[in-house]
Image 1 (cartoon, rainbow, N blue to C red):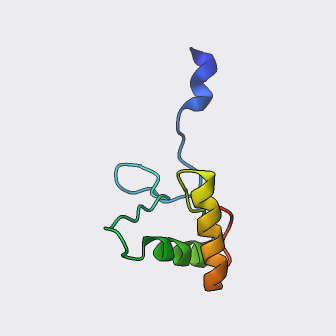
Image 2: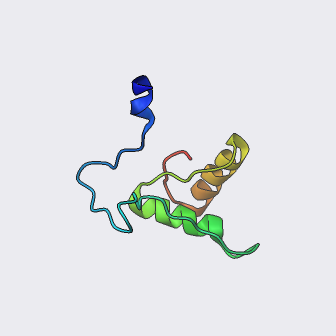
Amino acid sequence: MSGMKWLEKQPRKGLILENGGQDLMTKIIGFGRCFGKTTMAILESHATGHYIVCANRKLADNTFRFAKELGYTIPYP
């Protein structure tokens, strides 16, 4: 199945990889209810320009709207 080789995960060039060569670009924010997870993700996205990954379009719309209400510009999740 040499035609499927492009599906293999390749590390991005120019990144310093730690933790056994895993790409550490993903940050998971997880706490209980009402602990400011969305706000923390918005602040991180605003500071770095990274995307927020949401489960569906409705959550993405709500997150983007909430960021605007807070006065932060983020890329659309």
